[in-house]
Image (tube, rainbow, N blue to C red; front, top):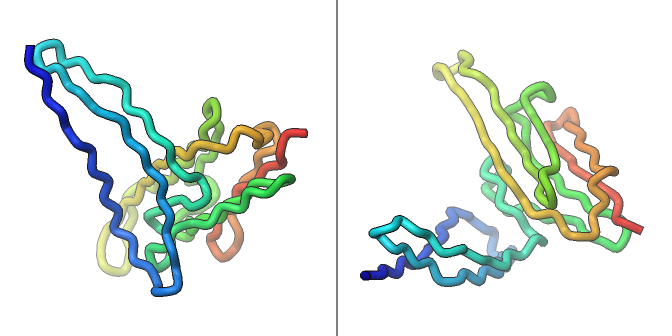
Length: 148
């Protein structure tokens, strides 16, 4: 039986100001695909949750996550969407954000936007206190208290 080893490369097109630092801790285990049985071995990782990538963020910056002893908070640019087009939910220990609007006419033609992201929440976040709010400026603020 032949085994093939594939390396996983994560590419991120992030542009930063010279004063910004991006720390992305990623440890990826080995991926082995056995072609005859099409079997995939589990992929493990250890991603830092202090900064998130959000593709709609102004100037393609990373998102700073506030994670203190008493609260968790993150703010995302969702100015292209209305409150009815945004869904924020918790699935297990993950925060799932789904934004979508159907095709609509804009100044330069027709446009359709859809984004879906899943982020791992810190284990001490009380998911029952999770709130989401879209400000008038289009910032989606997601916050929760910490477990006692």
